[in-house]
Image 1 (cartoon, rainbow, N blue to C red):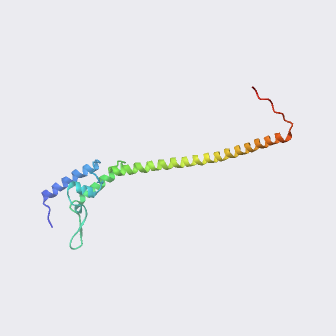
Image 2: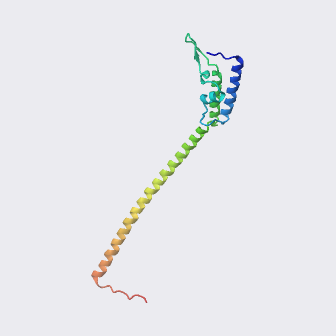
Image 3: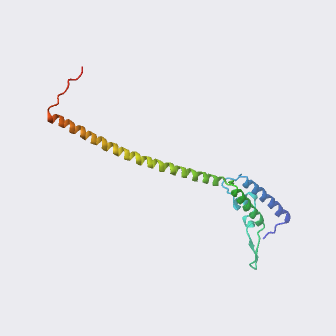
Length: 155
């Protein structure tokens, strides 16, 4: 196991802080998220330094950069609490969720309108059929009675 010198640790911490600022400003690398994995990759350090360690006797001790991981997560939470979205994918997901909800409402409205129009169409067709039957009945009645004369057609 290689021990870090104080200068290596300071250089790594500076790289982590720089990467942290880059991520929190929304400048994520392709395929990256606002998480510790991306932070470690941008800073060029291993992720294991962000997590607690265990001594040989089983006692827990903080990871080399655990304080920076906690600071990173606090800053992300603070930004999220103020409504700022750091990760563009999260913003895209939120946009798509709201768009999906809007489309569901539009579909429900269209379905209701279609049902109303179908009911109107059925009613109109039944009324037309009833009127046609009445006209046919009256025509038949005229021919059976025989006391109706046809008027000459206009020239």
